Length: 100
Image 1 (cartoon, helix red, strand yellow):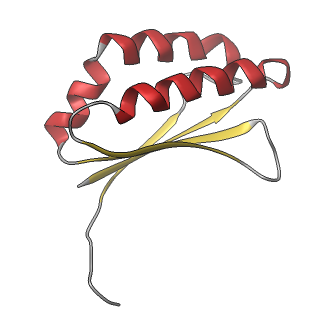
Image 2 (tube, one colour; image 1 turned 180 degrees about the horizontal axis):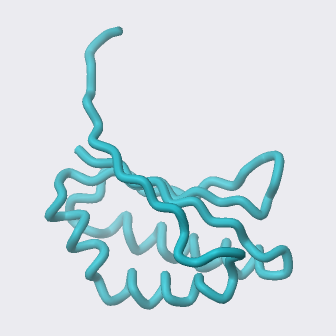
């Protein structure tokens, strides 16, 4: 399983619009085959900071997500709303354990 974490810093005047776009991206991504989880999280100390976190069953599924027309359309619209584009995106391979 793979996990992606994308970090965004919204322009203060664009925070609400970015949140709307992020919500649309979450709703879309959750419908994609192979998406185990997808969510948007807002920093409690700085509301302009957002994280998009996804869990995917495979690299192929993740690549399909990135190639999806709706994903591309939404993410393209992020560029004018964030302080720095493209965002910081991290990819992790998740190892699940029954106990520590």
